[in-house]
Image (cartoon, rainbow, N blue to C red; front, side, top):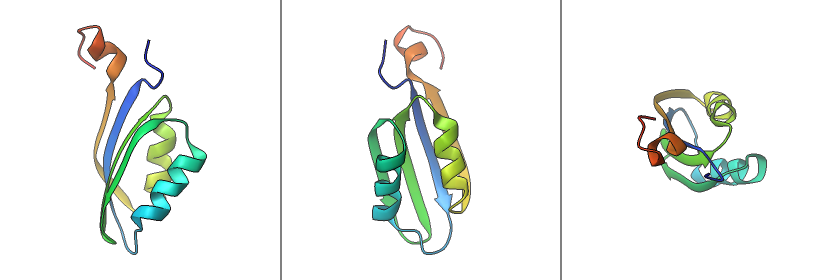
Length: 83
C-alpha cells in the first residue's frame, strides 16, 4: 500500500502567481510528497502525491483558473488496473 495514493497534476493560470509561495503553502498545509511547482507569474504547473487531491484542487482554484487536471490512482496502477 502506498503512503500517498493519488498523483495530482494541474495547471493554474492567473496573475502574480509565485512558485515559492505556492510550494511553501502546499508543503505547510497538505500531507503528501513529490511536490513540483514550476512556472511563472501567469502559469504554474503543480505535481503532488496526496491522499486528498480535492484539497489541492480547491486551494489552486482559489489562486486562478485550473485546467488540464489529472488525478491518477497510483495504487490501482501498481495493481495493474487503470487508475
